[in-house]
Image (cartoon, rainbow, N blue to C red; front, side, top):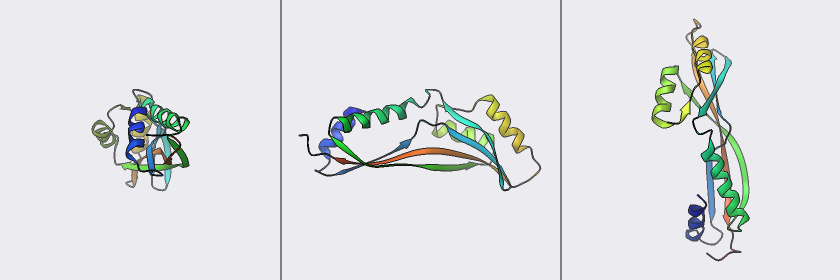
Length: 142
């Protein structure tokens, strides 16, 4: 990953910007909304424990330490997505987030909350996303 960022440094013009956006290492939370109330059910875990996001952060720290880029601004935001059922959520994860895992206890909590007689209910997944702007440093030669 550091190699890719080093290569990007050579491709950017002096003073060029790098925008980085990727999930944080915090597991995405799952809640069940029943009418206006949200019930916490658990988290989406990953088979590899979100290690690729940690690696991305470490690679960015390395190119900053090497003087290739300067961190200008960093923030996080919450990305929220919805599903009508546990089956729908699992189908989405199987297609889009293959190393995601919903443990049995979380699945049980989801199913219990969805058993309520109200019609207005859904699953809500909240994922923390990191967003940062870096500027190519010109103190190093490419």
